[in-house]
Amino acid sequence: MAPNKTTATLFIDKDSWLQRLHPLTKLSYILLTGVAAYGGPSSLLYICLLLFCNAVITASGGLLKDTAKALLRVILPLLLFMIPIHSFLFPGNRTVLLEFHGMIVYQEGLLFAISTLTKLTVVLIASFLFVFSTHPADLITALSHTCRSPSLAYLLGSPLLLLASMRERIETIQAAQRARGLDVDGNMFRRFLSLAPLLLPLVLGAIVEVEQRSIALEVRGFKSTSIKTSLRKLSDSALQRFCRWLMLAIAAVVLLLHGLG
Amino acid sequence: MIICAEDLTFAYNDSLMALQNISFEISAGECVALTGHNGSGKSTLVKHLNGLLKPTKGRILVANKDTATSRTAELASQVALLFQNPDDQICKQTVWDEVCFGPQNLGYDKKKTTTLVQEALALFELTSFEKKNPHDFGYSERKRIAMASIVAMDTPILVFDEPTAGLDSYEMSLLINTLKKLQSENKTVLVISHDMDFVAENILRAISLSAGKKVFDGKLRDLFEQTDLMTESGLLHPQTMQLSKACGLYSSPLSTDECVAAIAEQLGQPSLPNA
Ligand SMILES: Nc1ncnc2c1ncn2[C@@H]1O[C@H](COP(=O)(O)OP(=O)(O)O)[C@@H](O)[C@H]1O
Ligand SMILES: [Mg+2]
Image (spheres, rainbow over the protein chains, first blue to last red):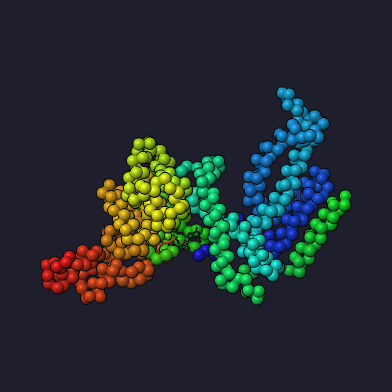
C-alpha cells in the first residue's frame, strides 16, 4: 500500500513548518482566530489585519493556492448572495452610496455584508490551514495523548475519517459513472445530481465503515490505557506548549472582556 | 488492432511504479485473459483503456484513438469496464435504471435501450428484479447487476475486472454464456481473473503481469508450461492439469473434456465408458 494516498484525505502532503506543527497548536489557533474575529473590535481595519496575518501564515506554509481555491468555492456564492441583499435591504440602511435605475445601494448594508464575510473568511482560512496541513491520523494520535481516553479521541477524530473515506468513495463512483458515458466534466450541478441517489448509501456506508474500524480497533486492544507506541512521530516542544496555553489564555480574556463589555 | 499499448508506464505517485514499459496488441474479436498476483497492476492497466488513468509515459490506443487525449465519457462508447467492486459502480435506485444508465448516456434511442437492457437482464437472470433497489441485494447479485449494466452498453470492447470473484457455480455459468455470446458477436473481451479453471476452459490467450511488468503474452497453454513464471505470477495450474500431472499423464488438459480424453488415451481406450 502507498503510505499516504493523498486522495484519501484533505491533507496535502508537503513538508512545511505548518505540517510539522503539533495538531493541537493549530486547533488552538483556530479557536483564537474565531474569538479574535467575532469577539474583538468590529472595525473593518482590524478584521483586515487578521485576514492579512492568516494570509501570510498560509503563504509561508506553501498552502496559499489550495486555501484560496477552497475559500473561493465557499465564499463566492455567499458573496454573490449577501452583498446585493444587504446593500439593498439591510434594516440599518441610511446613507445612499449610489443609485442605479431606481435601485439604491446603501453604505451600511454593504459594510455589514463585507465585514461579516471577512470575519467568516478569517476563520475559514484558519480552518482550511488546519485540515490541509494535518493528517487525520496525527490528530487522533495527538488527541489520544492528551485526552487519556482513546474512545473520546476516536470520537472526535472520526468525522475526519468519515469525510476522508466518503471523499474516496465519491471519487471512485464518479469515475465509474464517467466510464459509463456520463459527461459531467466541469458541471458541478449535474455532478451533484448524479450523486444524489447515492447520498444515503454513501453516508451509511461511511458510518458503517468507521464503526467497523472502531470495532476492529477495539479487538486489537485500542482502549487499553497502557502507554502505546506510536508509529507516527508527532513533534511537540515546550515553545509550542507555551504558545498553545498563551493562545487559549488570550482567547479566554477576549471572551471575558467581550462578555463584560 | 483495436487495442494497442506502446511502452505504457504509470506511477500513482512518484515513488511507486504501478506499470512499467508494457506493450501489447489485441485485435478485434479476441478474448484475452489478464492475469497476475494481487497488486501486479491489472486494474491499473485496464483503467487506462477508457482514460480513467492517463499514462505517465508511453501511450495506449483504443480504436486508433489515443486515450490520453480523449475524455472518458467519449471512450465509454468504445470500452465498457466492469469495476472490480460492484459497489463502485452501482448508482441508481432500481435495477432497471441501473442497467439503463450506460445506454442512456451513450445516447441510444428508446427502442434500442429497452432491447439492450432487457437482453442484458435476461442474460444474468435479473428480469424479475428489475423494479427492486440494487442496494438491497447480496454481493453476488450486485455483481450480476453490475455485469448486466456493462453488457447493456453494447460497446465493441468489454473489460471485466475480476468477474468471477464471489460468484457461485450457477452464476459462473451465466457469465460463461455471456462471454460466449459476446464472442459470437465478434466483441473484443478482456477478462481479469485468478480463477485458472475458468480461464483455461474459456480463454485461449493470456497476458500476465508481475509487479507492474508484462511477463507473459501468448497462448494460455504455453503459460502453463512455464512453471517458474506461474509461481512468480502467483497462479495455480487448473485442476485438470494438476490432476493429470498427479496421475502421471503426459498431456496438459485444459478442460474436463480434454482431461477425460487424456485419461482414456492413457488407458488405451477410444473413450471412457461414462464420458
Ligand atoms: N489509487 C491508488 N493510489 C495509489 N496506489 C494505488 C492505487 N490503486 C492501486 N495502487 C497500487 O498500485 C499497484 C497495482 O494495483 P492494482 O492495479 O489494483 O493491482 P491488481 O488489480 O493487479 O490487484 C498496487 O501496488 C497498489 O497498491
Ligand atoms: Mg485489481
